[in-house]
Length: 468
Image (cartoon, rainbow, N blue to C red; front, side, top):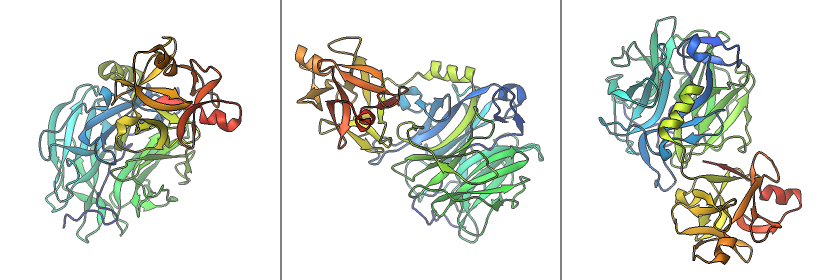
């Protein structure tokens, strides 16, 4: 064996999501219960995401466990101000590629790659493990050894194998032929693991295995192949039983597949993918039939990843768990604003000029805003910069710029806007100027200004999604 990273790029593997326990149809939502038992699974109504963070210039690099929640699995709220909720203390003292499994008893186990940062020469036969009853406290931290091979253990995921009455842990590693395969170990307690076996080896490099178990009697394994996401399937979970079948999807090179079952539809599935470090842009696809193996790209207006998130795992949770997580960790004290007609772009300041730029960028804090009561009218809003808190977005000669609040009534008026229903989409938002009430914030050639709005294009330019 050797420790050579994946040959496609210098950052080998990533993680994924939804390989869970025996599935049960849900009468209330039509979704699949993947995990703990019918009673608990039947109340799943939201999602939790786990991830680590990086950004293009690595200003956001943090290799602890991060969490976000979502009622629909598409729009996400980072918890704990997007700071980690747990951090490894052994091995490399950092993690990548985290994954959450709801176990058969209804509690959770968290797994992750043992690697802090981007030292691709570091080799660990171990993975990080935590136990949790509620994802608000993390106990029993340990590392679990998977093998004695001279190769790293990447992107662990776990699932319940009902036929064996035990859990399987799949992960990426380099095999004796020198290419990446997906391995499996079996464990009953996530403390000790059985001998490693090859789970999936089609004869070419594959990494980042992600399972959906027991979907109409079929098990689906998605993985990265040649910078694309591809699926294989099997009617059993036996090692070596999966065969490739799906149409490949990609967005300029994609890894880290994450399959997510819609809780609102009996047939809808989402497939998330991640561009590799450090940009970490998530893309999503949708299908109404896993069996068909074909996917349609989602409009980026429909989903928003947590800021700086990388290599996510997604797990269904109950409404009580969702509310308890928000109560424990809180929502961010800041917002980001996404453009309606350029949904890959976010409102930011650059050289103190207001504009919209394509995510991801650094300093990422340029896109974080506190929407505070309007300086001229508290029923309006003003946009206070997070990284320059003495400065606010204001218009000057109708162009938006980030200026220090000088305390004058003129500044207060220029920096105050009324939040209204979105001019292009009422579920989004538009912002009308306080002292030029016929004008709204809009982008023109990606630069922000206030203008009168009348055409369809102008309405789209003036519409934004306020999220995180």
